[in-house]
Image 1 (tube, rainbow, N blue to C red):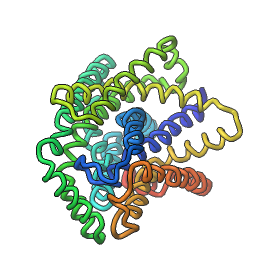
Image 2: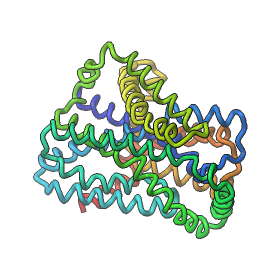
Image 3: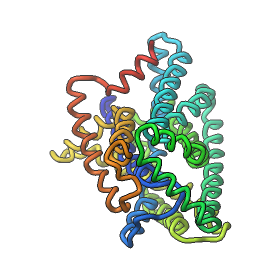
Image 4: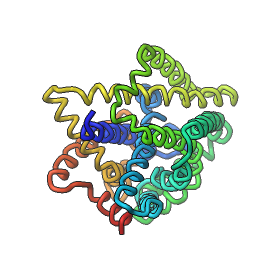
Length: 380
């Protein structure tokens, strides 16, 4: 596979992951985070179930893998140019951290950029580690992610089951805060950060770092120079991978839609560790097949998705900005007023805008606007 094809596949992975992250983040931006279902209908349960089954815990794994793989590209590029590799990478992490802080304060407190910047510091420690050590540590963090998913599942129903009056009060406070002016919204966002940030640590940090290391391992071996060779290792196993993923994701859905005891909550929560990685692998394989398509319409879509992926930072931040305008009180004020089947329809115009905007922007510029700022921070 040519270098341009390899970069196309990486950009497609990013562009596809950005779509899944949009779907994942929408509920967190559209309604209060305390587990109380408001405006829900019978259809809402189906929409939520599909999200849990196909999206939750899958796409950020892909994005984390690409981050780890991109780390090796940055290191090799810096070394070939005689630049200070450590300085370049740490300045890049600083840029992501600053973007993440602003993002969390003003638009979405479920920001992932701060997580990536912090975990990236530890990723650098494995730059020269041997492959066995990298895979061993990656597996350990995957096990930790399963335990953390289980902990989240264990306490998921606590607020509603043990103190529904507190849950209701917090939900009403959240709606009132987000429907206020810009300052009121930011205050509410900061108030809820004490809930969202620990959740991010439990839900994202171990699994993200595990995939960072897998990306680092594959990047050092240049495995995506020929991704067909990598995926040939799974030939004859795809059916089993699908059924394993379907079973464990099904358990995860069942645990999220039913009031369970603590043991059942822990086990069904932990099942996402297997279900997430199984479906993420299937998605990556399917995207490779998609990248080989020569159909006219699919080629257009492929080009547009790659453009989205090449501007992943800009498009990620753009999601939160557009959704804040739609849901917050200083914008259109739809926070806490729509059922999932309605606000999920926003995926189509927002990702459609990503596709069109990215293609048009790339006609005139080599990178997205926020990528330009990040590059200035990185290289000074």
